[in-house]
Image 1 (cartoon, rainbow, N blue to C red):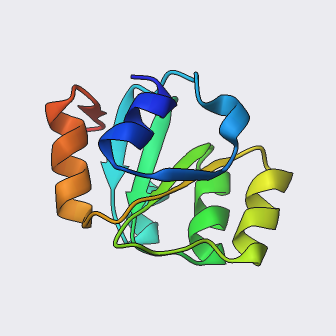
Image 2 (image 1 turned 45 degrees about the vertical axis):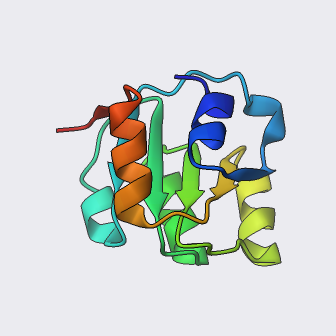
Image 3 (image 1 turned 135 degrees about the vertical axis):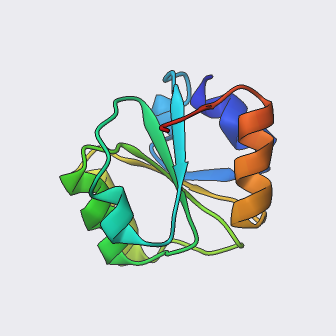
Length: 114
């Protein structure tokens, strides 16, 4: 599934990394618990989280996750955006809950990690 399609499904704005809109994303993982994210090993994965802080971006960086969707109408701070740009990451902002975002993407064909 292309990133642009994911943004459309989530009614999300791509606030960082618009140039990657045609990237193919295969997997999704939803969590606000960053210790769970550190256990993952998958490529082409979208992290869906309501934890919009620098730690979420740092955790994604350590886990080689390039795509992050902030849900629950959370906004990326300037510090988050700077860090994401520095690491070639994509940040989306969606008004949906974590549950709704995950369900919509699963229904549309995004695969779970496990």
